[in-house]
Length: 123
Image 1 (cartoon, one colour):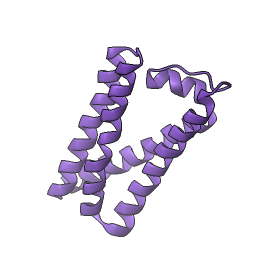
Image 2 (cartoon, helix red, strand yellow):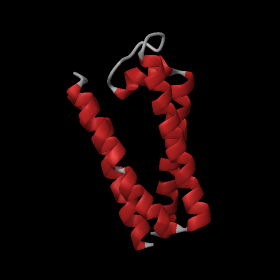
Image 3 (cartoon, helix red, strand yellow):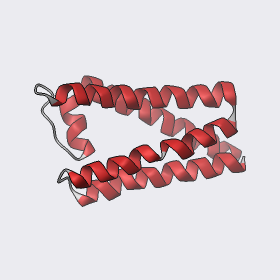
């Protein structure tokens, strides 16, 4: 189970880095995939960059915790970070995004992050 816990944690952390990259360098397509399209040339551009920085930073912090602080620190991090996709679910729903995206992407991600936390706690 330890290998599964570490692998899932690393994959989730790397996925955060990927999302950060997309929002910083491909903001229009990233926003559409998020579930709330935005025009990066307009006022939304700064917010898309902020999201990219947030997601990328979460990935870096997660990897750093796993390497330098250990599995239990990563478990607590994952437990706390699950609030982000839960909040994203609400944001998509409140802004007229598709329920399939809200639940199928963001809420599902929150569940996977919580599963990761449980596996890490058990390792």
